[in-house]
Image 1 (cartoon, rainbow, N blue to C red):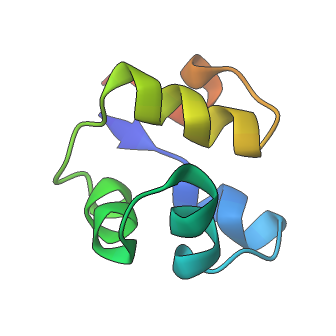
Image 2: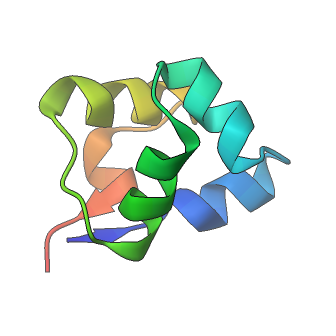
Image 3: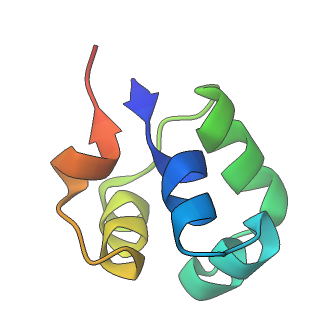
Length: 63
């Protein structure tokens, strides 16, 4: 799975900690997501997409 989280965070001036707090996870979870080492639950993927006002498919791309 490819993720656009890092790009979207930069575009929205959010740190990993900012995003983690908005979606209720630890910063390390965001790190693992950005590196592609963790597949999020549907709820977490949805919460992250909502932060960026996007659809899940726009943030997480199946390769």
